Amino acid sequence: MKVHPSKKKGLSPLLIAQFMGAANDNILKALLGFAVVKGGMWAGSLGQGGQGLIALCLFIPFVLFSGWAGPLADRYSKRTISVFMKWVEVPLAIAAGLGFATNNFWFAGVAMFLLATQSTFFSPAKYGMIPEIVPEHNIARANGILNMTTNIAIIAGMLAAGILSDQLKLGDIQSKRLPGIVLYLVATIGLLAIICLPKLASMNPKIKLPKNPFSTYIKTGGEMCKTALMKVSIAWAFFYLLATVVLLLINELGPLLQVSDSMVSYLLASVGVSVGFGSLMAGFISRGIVRLPLSKYASLGMAISVLYAGIAPVSYGNIMAALIALGFTAGLYAIPLQTLIQTLPESGNRGQVLATSNAISFLFMAVGSLLYWALRPLFGDSPQYIFVVCALVGVLAWGVTMRIHLPDESNDTI
Image (cartoon, rainbow, N blue to C red; front, top):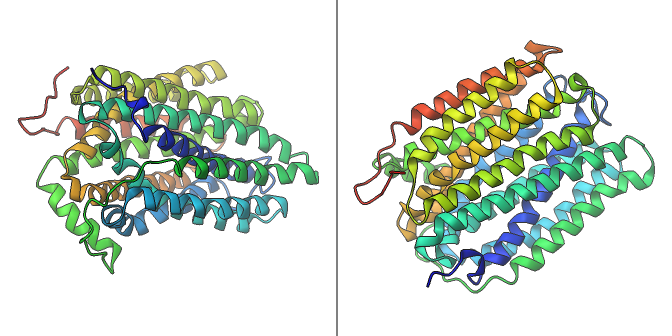
């Protein structure tokens, strides 16, 4: 009799901790994004397209430090790493809240950078422990559940950010204190959850930590190039590049659609909901087998969805419909690739592979941030046309997935 992954001891605490971490990250990121666009409390602080620079600061730590995070996750217990990082998150959440309470943009920005650094070290541990706490035949389904709950957290974070942003515009003391209170409570719940994880053994206690974090990428990346892992990681990274540009663009649609930040947050939430459903559907379709064709077909679905958003008559309903379709196909696209990244490496190198894959993904997200920063001024009062550029990213993702060929023992048929 198969054990449903959500009932496997250890997965539930991870799901709760990941939920809270993702919620906090998105509350802070979205709040800062709303704050620097037209009508925000720090409007114009970074110029037009300034959201791209904020996102860049969020992604840089993952590129710089993942080379240390991966070996740490292999050398030490992934539970130990996870608990420590959740302890670190609490004071950083308080610091971010102080930035809003004191109307200090740079204080909040530095806190976000440090929270991103904390997430960098948590990431390979949380994803790497899934094969350790879930039966192999249930890994794809567990990934689907993890992605679904993560995207629900993203939804909650974005909705909360929209509400908090509207409150911040009131300008009173109590409203400015709200972000800090929310960030602290969410971080504390995540800490309490992660403590409940079962004990996990170190997978490779003899591994040496590199003095140069980029040496991990070079060495591991070279090994990944000998297998399908590098192409899989690049395909996975295109998912995040597309998501970066789309989410930054959505934050700018308020004036165009003539809606409040709360209404914009519903658009952001629609992406999260649909990605969650797409991820869950991919997990159930997989049934213990990697269904790579899902990614191949879904990449075209992503391209068509954003193309429609860019060329259809501008309306809240059209944008919402396109984003729902985009999210669902993106969820179908991501799960087979994520499962391959977790299952193709040997257990002793899994953390390094995940760290390198994460670094590639965040490098693509950094590129997406810079791309948005460069494109935004070109489109003036018609930012929706950036969706057309996003369609080209979807086509590139399709091209990469079509070149992935799995080992003979892998099943890539639907």
